[in-house]
Image (cartoon, rainbow, N blue to C red; front, side, top):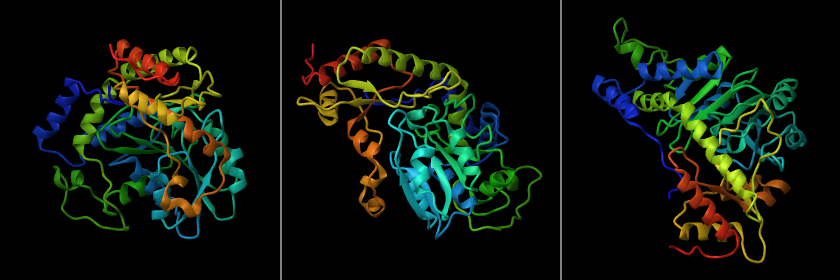
Length: 383
């Protein structure tokens, strides 16, 4: 069984084929429709489709004026793209620790790192769990610091009743990569209620041009345009948006299936000594976990480690992954490393189990059975 398999139905395939047939492949009507649906679903004024979440993080930092001499605080226990974006802006990434029960950054883990050079904070809902972002927002706003939600895992996350990017948030960025809850193969989206930021991001996403192809080449358009900013090539094509629109049509059912699988895993872990669900603390009644992935913590002993369990799972033909290798573990960020007690202790124990809507109940039982065998320090015996 693979770690992940995208769930693509015939309706979605037909939407992509429709874009192929109508001849509009780059940014056009499907992107506009996708942006409008996401804005309504998430309760924000502005949604800007992009070719990746990394593009959204980069553009958000640029739009907030992050540059040389500035510092950006972000968790080390995250994918490395946010740190890369900080450095592409010429700023300094300042890595913070995470809370042991949420594996998310917090005011407590960030506050000791705040200086007069702190320009922005990047938060990340680990595995798609809500992180209590309003507390970070309130702290940062009182100090004039921008908060960018790296909600790459956040399609489906509800934090105190709100989607990322809404309820007073500055900016949130979603990913629609192949393993995410809604996929466009590759793609991302920036959400904000700040019209100025949205306008800046739209301009920067396409070379700084004030007219995209849809505005130039459709009826009533004109070939003339201005370039008023040093922009990038970050726009989303219609083919990607068509795929995502098909996914959105099935999002409620796919999300429900993720939750059913997660509930089965959580119940099963009670019977597997030495293995527990990670980052499950402080989830309130108005919160929702997106279950973008399902992390467990393997408590090492004389018989097992996280790595031996991963090997045993592979031998049982069960795919797994690790979320994440902290950014400070990579050679390119060695100069930014500092002691991060929780991150340093927890990440060597983390293993992510398969979780995707197409898994059958038998598939889930196979994963649980293989994990139970692996956690006992035994090899899986094939029937």
